[in-house]
Image 1 (tube, rainbow, N blue to C red):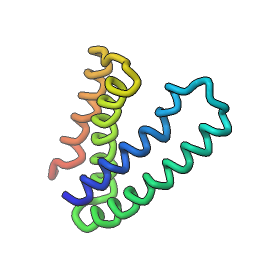
Image 2: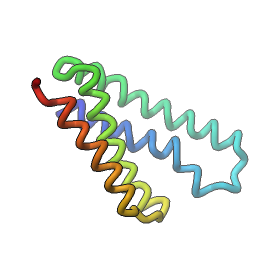
Image 3: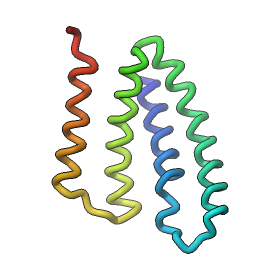
Length: 109
């Protein structure tokens, strides 16, 4: 559970690093890049321990799958709350199909 919590915090920081600047399109690109790199450093401070801790319980493919699902959830909330963009039905269907992949990754065959 610690790995999932750390991955969630990590994804919040990374989402801001990747997309937070979209509300500040007037800012100089070089400033946005520097700020994004600083935010990404903080993200790595959570991501690396999350993967290290998680590797005791999950395979690398499972960890990546968990991270992608968390990313989708965090991005959906970020998109609606911070960027004020709506979630269209086709986005949700696409995300749902990606989440369905979790079944195949975690299923014991």
